[in-house]
Image (cartoon, rainbow, N blue to C red; front, top):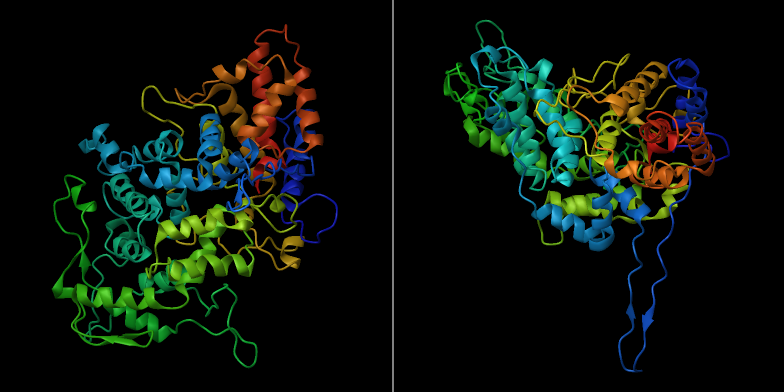
Length: 570
Protein backbone atom coordinates (compact mmCIF):
# COMPACT_ATOMS: atom_id res chain seq x y z
CA UNK A 1 0.00 0.00 0.00
CA UNK A 2 1.05 3.54 -0.73
CA UNK A 3 4.47 2.82 -2.16
CA UNK A 4 4.71 6.45 -3.06
CA UNK A 5 7.56 6.34 -5.53
CA UNK A 6 6.03 3.37 -7.35
CA UNK A 7 9.36 1.57 -7.36
CA UNK A 8 10.58 -1.52 -5.59
CA UNK A 9 11.09 -1.81 -1.85
CA UNK A 10 8.76 -2.06 1.07
CA UNK A 11 5.68 0.07 1.51
CA UNK A 12 5.24 2.48 4.45
CA UNK A 13 2.99 -0.04 6.22
CA UNK A 14 5.66 -2.68 5.96
CA UNK A 15 8.37 -0.26 7.04
CA UNK A 16 6.34 0.49 10.17
CA UNK A 17 6.11 -3.22 10.84
CA UNK A 18 9.85 -3.72 10.44
CA UNK A 19 10.63 -0.84 12.80
CA UNK A 20 8.20 -2.17 15.36
CA UNK A 21 9.61 -5.66 15.11
CA UNK A 22 13.06 -4.44 16.00
CA UNK A 23 11.79 -3.35 19.41
CA UNK A 24 9.35 -6.16 20.05
CA UNK A 25 11.29 -8.21 22.54
CA UNK A 26 8.25 -10.35 23.25
CA UNK A 27 8.25 -11.63 19.68
CA UNK A 28 10.26 -14.48 18.27
CA UNK A 29 12.79 -14.01 15.50
CA UNK A 30 10.38 -15.72 13.14
CA UNK A 31 7.72 -13.17 13.99
CA UNK A 32 10.10 -10.34 13.20
CA UNK A 33 10.90 -12.00 9.88
CA UNK A 34 7.24 -12.18 8.96
CA UNK A 35 6.54 -8.57 9.94
CA UNK A 36 9.36 -7.55 7.66
CA UNK A 37 7.95 -9.40 4.62
CA UNK A 38 7.45 -6.99 1.78
CA UNK A 39 5.52 -7.86 -1.36
CA UNK A 40 1.81 -8.46 -1.83
CA UNK A 41 0.34 -11.50 -3.53
CA UNK A 42 -2.28 -10.68 -6.17
CA UNK A 43 -5.59 -12.41 -5.59
CA UNK A 44 -6.62 -15.04 -8.10
CA UNK A 45 -8.65 -13.68 -10.98
CA UNK A 46 -12.13 -14.88 -11.84
CA UNK A 47 -12.77 -17.47 -14.51
CA UNK A 48 -13.36 -16.32 -18.08
CA UNK A 49 -16.99 -15.81 -19.06
CA UNK A 50 -18.37 -18.01 -21.80
CA UNK A 51 -20.95 -17.18 -24.47
CA UNK A 52 -24.06 -18.95 -25.65
CA UNK A 53 -24.65 -19.27 -29.40
CA UNK A 54 -27.18 -22.08 -29.79
CA UNK A 55 -28.92 -20.29 -32.64
CA UNK A 56 -27.74 -17.50 -34.95
CA UNK A 57 -30.68 -15.27 -33.97
CA UNK A 58 -30.31 -15.78 -30.23
CA UNK A 59 -28.84 -12.93 -28.20
CA UNK A 60 -25.31 -13.41 -26.94
CA UNK A 61 -25.33 -14.12 -23.21
CA UNK A 62 -22.12 -13.41 -21.30
CA UNK A 63 -21.82 -15.50 -18.18
CA UNK A 64 -20.51 -13.44 -15.27
CA UNK A 65 -17.07 -14.44 -14.09
CA UNK A 66 -17.16 -16.55 -10.97
CA UNK A 67 -16.10 -14.83 -7.77
CA UNK A 68 -13.15 -16.52 -6.12
CA UNK A 69 -12.98 -17.06 -2.38
CA UNK A 70 -10.05 -14.62 -2.24
CA UNK A 71 -12.09 -11.92 -3.99
CA UNK A 72 -14.99 -12.58 -1.63
CA UNK A 73 -12.73 -12.28 1.41
CA UNK A 74 -11.24 -9.06 0.06
CA UNK A 75 -14.74 -7.64 -0.41
CA UNK A 76 -15.67 -8.58 3.15
CA UNK A 77 -12.55 -6.83 4.48
CA UNK A 78 -14.07 -3.62 3.10
CA UNK A 79 -17.72 -4.29 3.89
CA UNK A 80 -17.68 -5.94 7.33
CA UNK A 81 -15.85 -5.97 10.62
CA UNK A 82 -14.18 -9.21 9.52
CA UNK A 83 -14.76 -12.15 7.22
CA UNK A 84 -15.88 -15.59 8.30
CA UNK A 85 -15.52 -18.75 6.24
CA UNK A 86 -19.28 -19.11 5.93
CA UNK A 87 -19.71 -15.48 4.88
CA UNK A 88 -17.02 -15.90 2.22
CA UNK A 89 -18.96 -18.83 0.79
CA UNK A 90 -22.16 -16.76 0.86
CA UNK A 91 -20.55 -13.93 -1.13
CA UNK A 92 -19.27 -16.44 -3.70
CA UNK A 93 -22.80 -17.78 -4.05
CA UNK A 94 -24.79 -14.54 -3.86
CA UNK A 95 -22.18 -12.35 -5.57
CA UNK A 96 -21.31 -8.87 -4.32
CA UNK A 97 -24.54 -7.03 -5.06
CA UNK A 98 -26.72 -9.90 -3.89
CA UNK A 99 -24.88 -10.00 -0.57
CA UNK A 100 -25.28 -6.22 -0.17
CA UNK A 101 -29.00 -6.49 -0.88
CA UNK A 102 -29.30 -9.28 1.70
CA UNK A 103 -27.60 -7.05 4.26
CA UNK A 104 -29.87 -4.11 3.40
CA UNK A 105 -32.88 -6.36 4.01
CA UNK A 106 -31.59 -7.63 7.35
CA UNK A 107 -33.36 -6.09 10.37
CA UNK A 108 -31.34 -4.04 12.82
CA UNK A 109 -29.68 -6.08 15.54
CA UNK A 110 -30.61 -5.48 19.15
CA UNK A 111 -29.86 -1.83 19.78
CA UNK A 112 -27.07 -0.86 22.13
CA UNK A 113 -29.64 0.84 24.35
CA UNK A 114 -31.90 -2.20 24.59
CA UNK A 115 -28.95 -4.50 25.26
CA UNK A 116 -27.78 -2.31 28.15
CA UNK A 117 -31.27 -2.34 29.62
CA UNK A 118 -31.70 -6.08 29.15
CA UNK A 119 -28.39 -6.78 30.85
CA UNK A 120 -29.11 -4.76 33.98
CA UNK A 121 -26.99 -1.67 33.46
CA UNK A 122 -29.82 0.66 34.56
CA UNK A 123 -29.07 0.03 38.25
CA UNK A 124 -28.54 3.19 40.27
CA UNK A 125 -24.87 2.35 40.87
CA UNK A 126 -24.18 3.02 37.18
CA UNK A 127 -25.60 6.53 37.08
CA UNK A 128 -22.16 8.14 36.95
CA UNK A 129 -20.20 5.37 35.26
CA UNK A 130 -19.43 4.05 31.79
CA UNK A 131 -20.26 0.46 32.74
CA UNK A 132 -21.49 -1.65 29.86
CA UNK A 133 -20.51 0.68 27.02
CA UNK A 134 -17.44 -1.20 25.81
CA UNK A 135 -19.20 -4.53 26.24
CA UNK A 136 -22.12 -3.59 24.03
CA UNK A 137 -19.84 -2.09 21.39
CA UNK A 138 -17.59 -5.16 21.13
CA UNK A 139 -20.50 -7.58 21.18
CA UNK A 140 -22.25 -5.97 18.24
CA UNK A 141 -19.09 -5.53 16.17
CA UNK A 142 -18.07 -9.16 16.63
CA UNK A 143 -21.25 -11.18 17.01
CA UNK A 144 -24.12 -9.54 15.14
CA UNK A 145 -24.93 -10.68 11.58
CA UNK A 146 -25.80 -7.21 10.21
CA UNK A 147 -22.16 -6.68 9.36
CA UNK A 148 -22.54 -4.12 6.57
CA UNK A 149 -24.57 -1.93 8.92
CA UNK A 150 -21.92 -2.34 11.63
CA UNK A 151 -19.12 -1.41 9.23
CA UNK A 152 -20.90 1.64 7.79
CA UNK A 153 -21.93 2.67 11.30
CA UNK A 154 -18.31 2.65 12.43
CA UNK A 155 -17.32 4.63 9.33
CA UNK A 156 -19.92 7.21 10.33
CA UNK A 157 -18.62 7.19 13.92
CA UNK A 158 -15.15 7.96 12.55
CA UNK A 159 -16.65 10.94 10.70
CA UNK A 160 -19.47 12.21 12.95
CA UNK A 161 -17.51 11.80 16.13
CA UNK A 162 -18.78 11.52 19.67
CA UNK A 163 -16.49 10.12 22.37
CA UNK A 164 -17.91 8.90 25.66
CA UNK A 165 -15.24 10.69 27.70
CA UNK A 166 -16.43 14.06 26.40
CA UNK A 167 -20.12 13.42 27.09
CA UNK A 168 -20.73 15.46 30.24
CA UNK A 169 -23.95 13.81 31.31
CA UNK A 170 -24.89 11.18 33.85
CA UNK A 171 -25.70 7.74 32.43
CA UNK A 172 -23.09 8.50 29.81
CA UNK A 173 -22.92 4.88 28.68
CA UNK A 174 -26.61 5.11 27.73
CA UNK A 175 -26.28 8.55 26.17
CA UNK A 176 -23.36 7.47 24.00
CA UNK A 177 -25.02 4.15 23.16
CA UNK A 178 -28.08 6.08 22.00
CA UNK A 179 -25.83 8.13 19.71
CA UNK A 180 -24.22 5.06 18.17
CA UNK A 181 -27.72 3.63 17.70
CA UNK A 182 -28.61 6.77 15.73
CA UNK A 183 -25.71 6.11 13.36
CA UNK A 184 -26.58 2.43 12.95
CA UNK A 185 -30.31 3.07 12.55
CA UNK A 186 -29.61 5.60 9.79
CA UNK A 187 -26.68 3.85 8.10
CA UNK A 188 -28.94 2.69 5.24
CA UNK A 189 -31.23 5.72 5.25
CA UNK A 190 -30.73 9.25 3.97
CA UNK A 191 -27.86 11.52 4.99
CA UNK A 192 -30.28 14.41 5.47
CA UNK A 193 -32.26 12.37 7.99
CA UNK A 194 -29.01 11.48 9.72
CA UNK A 195 -28.18 15.19 10.00
CA UNK A 196 -31.49 15.74 11.82
CA UNK A 197 -30.84 12.80 14.12
CA UNK A 198 -27.36 13.84 15.25
CA UNK A 199 -28.44 17.47 15.71
CA UNK A 200 -31.22 16.42 18.08
CA UNK A 201 -29.14 13.86 19.98
CA UNK A 202 -28.25 14.50 23.62
CA UNK A 203 -24.74 12.99 23.47
CA UNK A 204 -23.81 15.10 20.44
CA UNK A 205 -25.34 18.14 22.15
CA UNK A 206 -23.10 17.56 25.16
CA UNK A 207 -19.97 16.55 23.23
CA UNK A 208 -20.07 19.65 21.01
CA UNK A 209 -21.44 21.88 23.78
CA UNK A 210 -24.65 23.11 22.14
CA UNK A 211 -26.95 21.41 24.65
CA UNK A 212 -29.01 24.24 26.24
CA UNK A 213 -27.04 26.73 24.12
CA UNK A 214 -28.35 30.20 24.98
CA UNK A 215 -29.15 33.13 22.73
CA UNK A 216 -27.02 36.28 22.92
CA UNK A 217 -27.32 38.43 26.02
CA UNK A 218 -26.84 42.12 25.26
CA UNK A 219 -26.43 43.00 28.93
CA UNK A 220 -23.53 40.62 29.56
CA UNK A 221 -22.15 40.39 26.03
CA UNK A 222 -22.52 36.60 26.03
CA UNK A 223 -22.84 35.01 22.59
CA UNK A 224 -24.17 31.59 21.51
CA UNK A 225 -21.70 28.68 21.59
CA UNK A 226 -20.33 28.21 18.06
CA UNK A 227 -18.83 24.76 18.46
CA UNK A 228 -21.51 22.70 16.71
CA UNK A 229 -22.13 25.27 13.98
CA UNK A 230 -18.45 25.16 13.05
CA UNK A 231 -17.88 21.41 13.25
CA UNK A 232 -21.15 20.61 11.48
CA UNK A 233 -19.84 22.45 8.44
CA UNK A 234 -16.12 21.76 8.74
CA UNK A 235 -16.14 18.07 9.70
CA UNK A 236 -19.58 16.59 9.11
CA UNK A 237 -20.81 18.03 5.81
CA UNK A 238 -18.86 20.60 3.79
CA UNK A 239 -15.19 20.94 4.69
CA UNK A 240 -13.07 24.06 4.72
CA UNK A 241 -12.69 24.58 0.98
CA UNK A 242 -15.04 24.56 -1.98
CA UNK A 243 -14.86 21.31 -3.94
CA UNK A 244 -15.49 20.11 -7.44
CA UNK A 245 -17.60 16.96 -7.70
CA UNK A 246 -14.46 14.85 -7.95
CA UNK A 247 -13.25 16.14 -4.58
CA UNK A 248 -10.59 18.46 -5.98
CA UNK A 249 -10.34 21.89 -4.38
CA UNK A 250 -11.59 24.94 -6.23
CA UNK A 251 -9.14 27.83 -6.41
CA UNK A 252 -9.30 31.50 -7.19
CA UNK A 253 -7.39 33.38 -9.85
CA UNK A 254 -4.27 33.41 -7.67
CA UNK A 255 -4.46 29.68 -7.04
CA UNK A 256 -5.63 30.15 -3.46
CA UNK A 257 -8.25 27.64 -2.27
CA UNK A 258 -11.74 29.12 -2.03
CA UNK A 259 -13.20 28.89 1.45
CA UNK A 260 -16.54 27.16 1.91
CA UNK A 261 -17.75 29.44 4.68
CA UNK A 262 -16.66 32.41 6.77
CA UNK A 263 -16.65 33.21 10.45
CA UNK A 264 -19.82 35.22 9.85
CA UNK A 265 -21.50 32.03 8.60
CA UNK A 266 -20.44 30.23 11.79
CA UNK A 267 -21.77 33.03 13.97
CA UNK A 268 -25.07 33.16 12.08
CA UNK A 269 -25.54 29.40 12.17
CA UNK A 270 -24.75 29.28 15.90
CA UNK A 271 -27.78 31.52 16.51
CA UNK A 272 -29.97 28.78 15.00
CA UNK A 273 -28.62 26.09 17.31
CA UNK A 274 -29.75 27.79 20.50
CA UNK A 275 -32.49 26.48 22.75
CA UNK A 276 -32.02 22.76 22.03
CA UNK A 277 -32.52 21.07 25.40
CA UNK A 278 -33.22 17.73 27.06
CA UNK A 279 -36.81 16.55 26.76
CA UNK A 280 -37.06 15.72 30.48
CA UNK A 281 -35.54 16.85 33.77
CA UNK A 282 -35.76 13.35 35.29
CA UNK A 283 -32.19 12.16 35.86
CA UNK A 284 -32.80 9.03 37.94
CA UNK A 285 -33.16 6.94 34.77
CA UNK A 286 -31.31 7.32 31.48
CA UNK A 287 -34.49 7.54 29.40
CA UNK A 288 -34.23 11.22 28.47
CA UNK A 289 -30.99 10.59 26.60
CA UNK A 290 -32.78 8.42 24.07
CA UNK A 291 -35.35 11.12 23.34
CA UNK A 292 -34.64 13.80 20.71
CA UNK A 293 -33.81 17.24 22.04
CA UNK A 294 -36.63 19.76 22.21
CA UNK A 295 -36.69 23.51 21.76
CA UNK A 296 -36.64 25.69 24.88
CA UNK A 297 -38.12 28.94 23.58
CA UNK A 298 -36.81 30.95 26.53
CA UNK A 299 -33.19 30.57 25.43
CA UNK A 300 -33.74 30.26 21.66
CA UNK A 301 -32.75 33.07 19.30
CA UNK A 302 -35.82 34.22 17.36
CA UNK A 303 -34.20 37.11 15.56
CA UNK A 304 -32.64 37.01 12.11
CA UNK A 305 -29.73 34.68 11.42
CA UNK A 306 -27.75 34.59 8.17
CA UNK A 307 -25.40 31.87 6.91
CA UNK A 308 -24.32 30.35 3.58
CA UNK A 309 -26.37 32.88 1.62
CA UNK A 310 -29.56 32.11 3.55
CA UNK A 311 -31.41 34.04 6.23
CA UNK A 312 -33.95 32.76 8.74
CA UNK A 313 -35.96 34.38 11.49
CA UNK A 314 -38.42 33.25 14.10
CA UNK A 315 -36.17 30.57 15.57
CA UNK A 316 -37.50 27.22 16.72
CA UNK A 317 -37.19 23.89 14.96
CA UNK A 318 -38.25 25.53 11.70
CA UNK A 319 -35.01 27.50 11.68
CA UNK A 320 -33.01 24.36 12.46
CA UNK A 321 -34.68 22.59 9.53
CA UNK A 322 -33.89 25.45 7.16
CA UNK A 323 -30.29 25.50 8.31
CA UNK A 324 -29.84 21.77 7.75
CA UNK A 325 -31.66 21.93 4.41
CA UNK A 326 -29.30 24.69 3.31
CA UNK A 327 -26.20 22.70 4.24
CA UNK A 328 -27.61 19.55 2.61
CA UNK A 329 -28.21 21.44 -0.64
CA UNK A 330 -24.64 22.78 -0.73
CA UNK A 331 -22.59 21.36 -3.64
CA UNK A 332 -19.74 20.41 -1.32
CA UNK A 333 -21.63 17.81 0.67
CA UNK A 334 -21.66 15.13 -2.04
CA UNK A 335 -17.89 15.00 -2.72
CA UNK A 336 -16.93 15.74 0.90
CA UNK A 337 -18.98 12.95 2.47
CA UNK A 338 -18.39 10.53 -0.39
CA UNK A 339 -14.61 10.81 -0.24
CA UNK A 340 -14.53 10.18 3.51
CA UNK A 341 -16.79 7.13 3.21
CA UNK A 342 -14.53 5.74 0.49
CA UNK A 343 -11.53 6.33 2.76
CA UNK A 344 -13.14 4.48 5.64
CA UNK A 345 -14.26 1.50 3.57
CA UNK A 346 -11.88 1.03 0.65
CA UNK A 347 -8.86 3.26 0.08
CA UNK A 348 -7.15 6.27 1.62
CA UNK A 349 -6.45 7.88 -1.76
CA UNK A 350 -9.38 7.36 -4.12
CA UNK A 351 -8.92 8.75 -7.60
CA UNK A 352 -10.86 11.89 -8.52
CA UNK A 353 -12.89 9.76 -10.92
CA UNK A 354 -13.87 7.36 -8.12
CA UNK A 355 -14.89 10.24 -5.86
CA UNK A 356 -16.80 11.80 -8.74
CA UNK A 357 -18.77 8.64 -9.45
CA UNK A 358 -19.77 8.20 -5.83
CA UNK A 359 -20.51 11.90 -5.37
CA UNK A 360 -22.78 11.83 -8.42
CA UNK A 361 -24.71 8.99 -6.80
CA UNK A 362 -24.92 10.96 -3.55
CA UNK A 363 -26.32 13.93 -5.48
CA UNK A 364 -28.83 11.76 -7.36
CA UNK A 365 -29.43 8.05 -6.80
CA UNK A 366 -30.87 7.73 -10.29
CA UNK A 367 -34.38 8.47 -9.11
CA UNK A 368 -33.86 12.10 -8.14
CA UNK A 369 -33.09 11.36 -4.48
CA UNK A 370 -30.14 13.13 -2.84
CA UNK A 371 -28.22 11.54 0.04
CA UNK A 372 -29.47 7.95 -0.42
CA UNK A 373 -27.02 5.97 1.70
CA UNK A 374 -27.90 2.60 0.16
CA UNK A 375 -27.06 3.90 -3.29
CA UNK A 376 -23.86 5.52 -2.03
CA UNK A 377 -22.73 2.34 -0.25
CA UNK A 378 -23.30 0.29 -3.39
CA UNK A 379 -21.47 2.86 -5.50
CA UNK A 380 -18.47 2.67 -3.17
CA UNK A 381 -18.24 -1.10 -2.77
CA UNK A 382 -19.08 -2.07 -6.36
CA UNK A 383 -16.91 0.53 -8.08
CA UNK A 384 -14.16 -0.83 -10.31
CA UNK A 385 -11.52 0.75 -8.05
CA UNK A 386 -12.89 -1.27 -5.14
CA UNK A 387 -13.46 -4.56 -6.94
CA UNK A 388 -10.70 -4.73 -9.54
CA UNK A 389 -7.72 -6.91 -8.66
CA UNK A 390 -5.55 -4.17 -10.15
CA UNK A 391 -5.58 -2.54 -6.72
CA UNK A 392 -3.43 -5.39 -5.42
CA UNK A 393 -0.42 -4.07 -7.33
CA UNK A 394 -1.21 -0.35 -7.36
CA UNK A 395 1.23 1.91 -5.54
CA UNK A 396 -1.56 4.14 -4.18
CA UNK A 397 -4.49 1.80 -3.59
CA UNK A 398 -5.61 0.49 -0.23
CA UNK A 399 -5.49 1.66 3.34
CA UNK A 400 -4.04 0.80 6.71
CA UNK A 401 -6.48 -1.43 8.58
CA UNK A 402 -7.85 0.33 11.65
CA UNK A 403 -6.55 -1.31 14.84
CA UNK A 404 -10.03 -2.17 16.11
CA UNK A 405 -10.74 -3.90 12.82
CA UNK A 406 -7.62 -6.02 13.18
CA UNK A 407 -9.04 -7.35 16.44
CA UNK A 408 -12.56 -7.87 15.09
CA UNK A 409 -11.16 -9.62 11.99
CA UNK A 410 -9.55 -12.22 14.25
CA UNK A 411 -12.58 -12.42 16.52
CA UNK A 412 -15.05 -12.96 13.71
CA UNK A 413 -12.83 -15.37 11.76
CA UNK A 414 -12.53 -17.67 14.76
CA UNK A 415 -15.94 -17.42 16.37
CA UNK A 416 -15.08 -15.36 19.45
CA UNK A 417 -17.91 -15.43 21.99
CA UNK A 418 -18.56 -14.46 25.60
CA UNK A 419 -20.82 -17.06 27.27
CA UNK A 420 -21.43 -14.80 30.26
CA UNK A 421 -22.30 -11.86 27.94
CA UNK A 422 -19.72 -9.75 29.77
CA UNK A 423 -17.61 -9.13 26.63
CA UNK A 424 -14.76 -8.03 28.83
CA UNK A 425 -12.44 -6.62 26.18
CA UNK A 426 -12.84 -3.13 27.57
CA UNK A 427 -11.22 0.13 26.49
CA UNK A 428 -8.46 -0.63 23.97
CA UNK A 429 -7.32 2.95 23.31
CA UNK A 430 -4.06 2.72 25.26
CA UNK A 431 -1.22 3.12 22.75
CA UNK A 432 1.47 1.41 24.81
CA UNK A 433 -0.40 -1.73 25.80
CA UNK A 434 -3.41 -2.19 23.53
CA UNK A 435 -4.67 -0.89 20.15
CA UNK A 436 -4.40 2.93 20.31
CA UNK A 437 -8.09 2.97 19.34
CA UNK A 438 -11.43 1.99 20.84
CA UNK A 439 -14.72 2.69 19.08
CA UNK A 440 -16.72 5.45 20.75
CA UNK A 441 -13.75 6.66 22.78
CA UNK A 442 -12.19 9.39 20.68
CA UNK A 443 -11.10 12.22 22.93
CA UNK A 444 -11.87 14.93 20.36
CA UNK A 445 -14.25 15.55 17.48
CA UNK A 446 -11.29 15.07 15.13
CA UNK A 447 -11.32 11.30 15.78
CA UNK A 448 -8.27 9.15 16.47
CA UNK A 449 -7.00 10.12 13.01
CA UNK A 450 -7.92 12.80 10.51
CA UNK A 451 -8.90 12.07 6.88
CA UNK A 452 -6.22 14.39 5.53
CA UNK A 453 -3.33 13.15 7.67
CA UNK A 454 -0.04 12.30 5.97
CA UNK A 455 2.90 11.09 8.09
CA UNK A 456 5.50 13.88 7.87
CA UNK A 457 8.84 13.35 6.17
CA UNK A 458 7.70 10.16 4.44
CA UNK A 459 7.31 8.99 0.87
CA UNK A 460 3.56 9.19 1.43
CA UNK A 461 3.69 12.91 2.16
CA UNK A 462 6.20 13.58 -0.62
CA UNK A 463 3.85 11.97 -3.12
CA UNK A 464 0.95 14.14 -1.99
CA UNK A 465 -0.90 11.15 -0.56
CA UNK A 466 -2.64 10.69 2.78
CA UNK A 467 -2.69 7.78 5.23
CA UNK A 468 -5.13 8.68 8.04
CA UNK A 469 -4.59 5.62 10.23
CA UNK A 470 -0.86 6.31 10.40
CA UNK A 471 -1.67 9.11 12.85
CA UNK A 472 -1.93 6.43 15.57
CA UNK A 473 0.75 4.15 14.11
CA UNK A 474 4.30 4.17 15.39
CA UNK A 475 6.85 1.74 16.84
CA UNK A 476 5.14 1.78 20.23
CA UNK A 477 1.62 1.18 18.96
CA UNK A 478 2.62 -1.57 16.51
CA UNK A 479 4.55 -3.49 19.18
CA UNK A 480 1.67 -3.03 21.64
CA UNK A 481 -0.79 -4.34 19.05
CA UNK A 482 1.19 -7.50 18.35
CA UNK A 483 1.83 -8.23 22.02
CA UNK A 484 -1.82 -7.59 22.91
CA UNK A 485 -3.07 -9.83 20.11
CA UNK A 486 -0.61 -12.55 21.14
CA UNK A 487 -2.41 -12.76 24.49
CA UNK A 488 -5.87 -12.66 22.94
CA UNK A 489 -5.11 -15.32 20.34
CA UNK A 490 -3.69 -17.70 22.92
CA UNK A 491 -5.89 -17.05 25.94
CA UNK A 492 -8.64 -14.57 25.16
CA UNK A 493 -9.66 -12.24 27.96
CA UNK A 494 -12.08 -13.23 30.68
CA UNK A 495 -14.50 -15.59 28.98
CA UNK A 496 -14.05 -13.83 25.62
CA UNK A 497 -12.40 -16.65 23.74
CA UNK A 498 -12.08 -17.97 20.21
CA UNK A 499 -13.41 -21.30 19.00
CA UNK A 500 -10.59 -22.94 17.04
CA UNK A 501 -12.39 -26.26 16.53
CA UNK A 502 -12.56 -26.00 12.74
CA UNK A 503 -9.05 -24.66 12.13
CA UNK A 504 -7.51 -27.22 14.49
CA UNK A 505 -8.36 -29.93 11.97
CA UNK A 506 -5.70 -28.41 9.69
CA UNK A 507 -3.03 -28.01 12.38
CA UNK A 508 -0.91 -30.97 11.28
CA UNK A 509 -0.64 -29.71 7.69
CA UNK A 510 1.15 -26.36 7.72
CA UNK A 511 0.30 -25.65 4.08
CA UNK A 512 -3.43 -26.19 4.56
CA UNK A 513 -3.37 -24.33 7.88
CA UNK A 514 -1.60 -21.24 6.59
CA UNK A 515 -3.65 -21.18 3.39
CA UNK A 516 -6.91 -21.15 5.36
CA UNK A 517 -5.76 -18.44 7.78
CA UNK A 518 -4.40 -16.44 4.84
CA UNK A 519 -7.74 -16.66 3.03
CA UNK A 520 -10.02 -15.70 5.90
CA UNK A 521 -7.85 -13.04 7.55
CA UNK A 522 -5.78 -11.65 4.67
CA UNK A 523 -7.94 -12.40 1.60
CA UNK A 524 -5.18 -14.61 0.22
CA UNK A 525 -2.82 -11.64 -0.06
CA UNK A 526 0.13 -12.94 1.96
CA UNK A 527 3.24 -12.92 -0.22
CA UNK A 528 5.07 -16.11 -1.01
CA UNK A 529 7.88 -14.95 1.26
CA UNK A 530 5.49 -14.39 4.15
CA UNK A 531 3.73 -17.72 3.62
CA UNK A 532 7.07 -19.52 3.62
CA UNK A 533 8.15 -17.80 6.83
CA UNK A 534 4.89 -18.57 8.61
CA UNK A 535 4.94 -22.19 7.51
CA UNK A 536 8.51 -22.52 8.77
CA UNK A 537 7.45 -21.11 12.14
CA UNK A 538 4.51 -23.51 12.31
CA UNK A 539 6.66 -26.49 11.35
CA UNK A 540 9.20 -25.62 14.02
CA UNK A 541 6.59 -26.95 16.47
CA UNK A 542 6.64 -30.73 16.18
CA UNK A 543 3.23 -32.32 15.69
CA UNK A 544 4.04 -34.64 18.59
CA UNK A 545 4.82 -31.84 21.04
CA UNK A 546 2.54 -31.04 23.99
CA UNK A 547 -0.42 -28.91 22.81
CA UNK A 548 1.11 -29.03 19.34
CA UNK A 549 -2.12 -28.51 17.39
CA UNK A 550 -3.19 -25.44 19.36
CA UNK A 551 0.29 -23.92 19.38
CA UNK A 552 0.68 -24.41 15.62
CA UNK A 553 -2.68 -22.74 15.04
CA UNK A 554 -1.79 -19.86 17.38
CA UNK A 555 1.48 -19.21 15.56
CA UNK A 556 -0.18 -19.23 12.13
CA UNK A 557 -2.86 -16.78 13.27
CA UNK A 558 -0.59 -14.41 15.20
CA UNK A 559 2.00 -14.15 12.47
CA UNK A 560 -0.69 -13.45 9.91
CA UNK A 561 -2.13 -10.72 12.15
CA UNK A 562 1.38 -9.24 12.41
CA UNK A 563 2.07 -9.32 8.68
CA UNK A 564 2.07 -6.12 6.64
CA UNK A 565 -0.19 -7.76 4.07
CA UNK A 566 -2.91 -8.20 6.70
CA UNK A 567 -2.39 -4.80 8.28
CA UNK A 568 -2.90 -3.31 4.82
CA UNK A 569 -6.38 -3.55 3.30
CA UNK A 570 -6.28 -3.71 -0.51
